[in-house]
Length: 386
Image 1 (cartoon, rainbow, N blue to C red):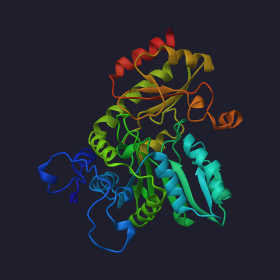
Image 2 (image 1 turned 90 degrees about the vertical axis):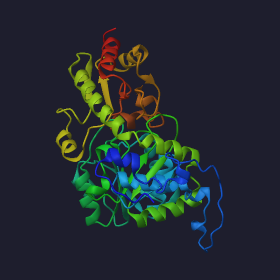
Image 3 (image 1 turned 180 degrees about the vertical axis):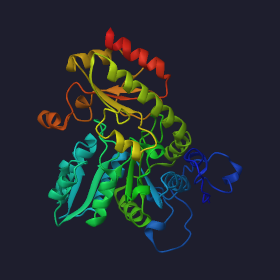
Image 4 (image 1 turned 90 degrees about the horizontal axis):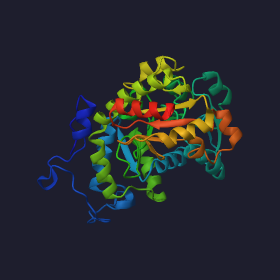
């Protein structure tokens, strides 16, 4: 079932992994709203057909489709992006191990690494994702993995991803990358040698802000170990959410390509506006890793952040004046979303640490949706100049 390969990611998003022949002749994958299935023999608990074991027909189609999108061996869906991240880290690492993690990751990831991993006896060091000397200086004999983001949240840094893979291989580390911001449309980590790619499918892969889901994609042997751990931790995705995610994925190429184009034009507009002090977007020539992003990615994504010359007060006024972007957390949906990261994802990070990381109180993060680009720019203009 679903073994055919496709040249284009747009075609793969629609057809890869789908059942062949179609179940009962249904063009759309049915929802198997059943917690348990007929016992078919065998002695392995993890092979029993049961919803918590992530092996229902709805799960299996998604696993095949996601693996195909990133040209990887296997995939596993979870109940949220953090379920994917936490389960993967707890599978790869054990008590006494050490993790190298890119500085300034997503706030939830930062919290898990700093607050939860130490309770399991797992230590960490934060690294500059673009400085191999920093990686080497912080490598320890018990270092087992290295964790980065393809485009970092919320400052849009692009680490030396090729260098990270080479470093991991040279030191026998498991290489992990959160690929949420780029999506498989713009970047497929296994193509350059990453062991594991993680996603909050809540964002671009689903694209409609109506579910929470996560995924881990990569080497089959590692995915199997993560699945066994997930079976015990219980962070599975329910069949109806599987169906919604599968439906959302079918339009991911169309949505992300529109968001790529729109975000670049908006970033250029903001960069030229006198009220804007700084724009963080890898598609801009002024971005310190612009050439790296050009070499690695098929598009620069729909996420950008910026600061106004008036600081926090000006940022709060802008959020009050915009009429199209919705002031709400999350990202990657069809609607544009705008937020202050210091007050949301980084609210639990100490102010001094936020400032050191570059997450100032007035930093604005914009997730560009699929609305008309000119209307978005006009709306931002009136909010800046009102």
